[in-house]
Length: 545
Image (cartoon, rainbow, N blue to C red; front, side):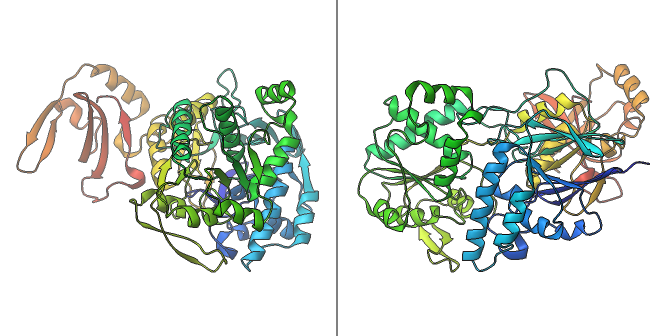
């Protein structure tokens, strides 16, 4: 049987160290090679040793964020003849990410690669446009716009054994600096979809409403004489915030105040300016009509050195600083947080995903006056900072939420779905919405899993064939069940009609979900005689039984 499998080297049950190995009969393909934000040394790497017995024929980069690209020189050091494929914008931005990674890891005393590794990596990059099919390695692949970040791509993979759609990080919502993900007009079936699940348990609020309240909050702080820190991912998010603030000030929705770009956000924003022809048409048109820089107009200023940074930190004037990193675990944003968090007139606004162990997540969980551990200015560990300033989160995510992911997956109508790039809760939540119709897997790091549909549906919930199930559903469509409350044990008892008891349901304990007085979901949580509850055998069937 032709080879057709997937192994996550990292980035499966976590957001970080994304790296995915596909095994086809024609050869091996590695998609992405990133680091874990906040980790240092070998602990930050994916399980690259698994490539020893399965050397890839090529590498694909879906986009240029650190958690997808920053381990690439380590791979190239081991496999120096590999070609790296990505879009032109990703090639440009990846070089900035890699140079910054080298600088930061050297300052930490734990570099994972050297300048020669970096140079060799950049020479190996082969830029490709969207929608161009490449079949140089036996298997074929095509890039499609995935939203999320300038140059980001989803990938359609074709082999003799089947087809796979790899979503990469994906967003179905347009922003001022990137268009929404491309989707085929009609349903386009594939054998498998490997999807991110970052917000698989969340329905995000309206972006338009979030932008409105975000601007209002900034205005309140500035008018009160305070300063606003926006820790931001340097790639994409910082440029989006730049555009939101410029537009709001030009329209009178914000008082005029300096907007400072510091850290990696400065260099990336300059790179965006150079790639204007790749940006959304609305932004290009505005630059053409105004004849002004789209990113450095108005009150936007760059912080070029420590002297300028000290001036901004110590100024009494209201101002906004957009600084890397977005999770406050590195970069220059912790310097501003240390200086401004103790003052209640200031504000810190979180605008992106926060890893479970990041200082940004901890800060959001604090009550006012609590302490958060932030990196020391000298780079020697962490120390506490008291937070009296306003701290608030705004959902300006560049990831699709549960509804967006379900819509994308269903457009490709796969038999098999693998969920990656997410913590346990979002992956399991998204699985519960898929596994009554799809064969859904939640791979662990290092686990090789098949990409072909195994035919498994609904797990232990049903004991009958699909044909018999369909006939039974038709026969009992209007059948009523009786619910009795047992006050002694504080449980609801479901009395099924006799002809149903042994026909559809395993013996055991079930949980019921009732919405507006109607039974909407039943879950088998413990099978009789096994003592097993929860976990992978927990299955949900939508609709009243």
